[in-house]
Length: 45
Image (cartoon, rainbow, N blue to C red; front, side, top):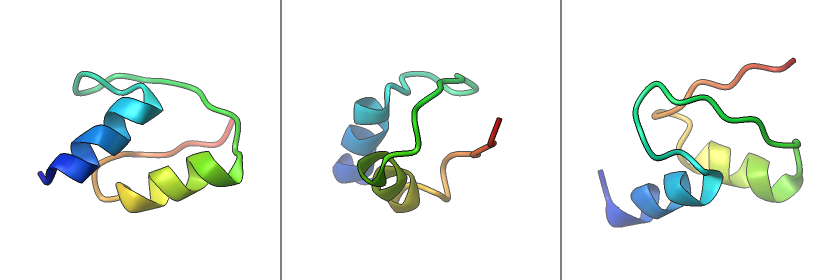
């Protein structure tokens, strides 16, 4: 994967595969998730 996607995942707090994190749905976070949507799974609580 490109370095930019790696940095986006790190900025979201994802370091390992199958890791779960929670973030508030701010425009900044949603933009980062959109950039790596093919690598992550998003669930609303």
